[in-house]
Image (cartoon, rainbow, N blue to C red):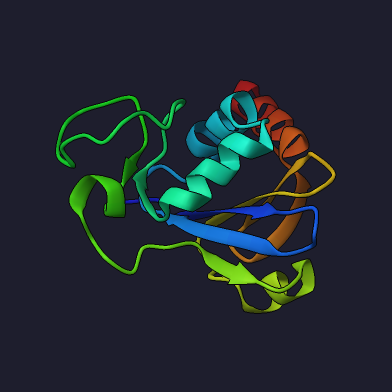
Length: 140
């Protein structure tokens, strides 16, 4: 069973793009990967350009067989040839918050350079703080 998530990017002009990711959306996986491997907004923009994901990886990688085991990202469009997997565009952050696709975990790289996360419809704040709390809870 997948732990679904979304990944979004707020651009300098205030618009927001959002994509869907089917597998491993929880903090320990997608949250950690985004924090460690996707601090560069141009790399996140590349995710947006490739559209909805089956699974997120540390690297975007190259086109590969959809069913192949890989540590790179697997995209529905690039790797399985599906249509209709493009990022959804929102006119502003407010438009995104009001109308975006909501999943179990929702991540956004804001134009301030920080990742933010929402769990199950509740805005939580900075991803770094959520990861720290999650690690502390695991250690307790």
